[in-house]
Image 1 (spheres, helix red, strand yellow):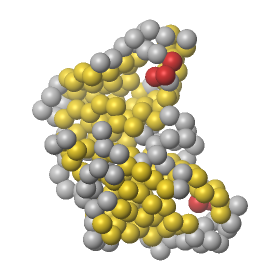
Image 2: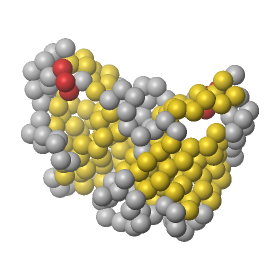
Image 3: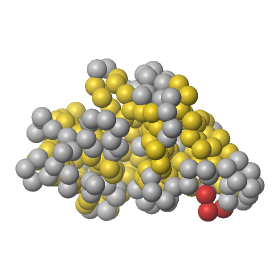
Image 4: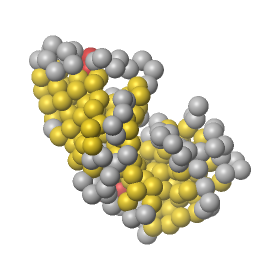
Length: 113
Length: 117
């Protein structure tokens, strides 16, 4: 099955700096890679996703890059703000059928004002 | 984006009782719904996958007679924790998959914190 690894497990940055979270996956058939933000006591919220026919996607301060050859994808947050502090999860799945998302172990991001 | 609601958000029950958690997709039809369990500071652990109108598929180690899942319509799935025990205390999160705005995506509910006394 799929195995998703995520690094780092914790990340602290100064407000205004950039944050980068990296994930690797094992199943070459995976072709959908979403990122979720989870605040304390809440469910995960989809913040950005990328599909295998795209190498990079950007939405304001958030960007995701995908390298299918190396089987890794990354989340980039620029100009970080205190409200960006949360746990971020990467995930991977095959789009077809009822295949589930396989989650990384999460990164706790702390943005220091 | 699409919205998934979950009810209740918190529930406290006595050991031995049953608890039902509802999950609804509010603005899209969810052909597939998932139920996850999350322990503090850990990632989401998939419990089961359900398709509308059919029996749920449970992950290894998840007792199907203890965690009853019903997916009777394209917008509603329920998880019933039967004969709950303190070790069932956890954060339960549902997720619905469907198309929203033309794109295939999976959205999560806000979660239900279950505490079994």
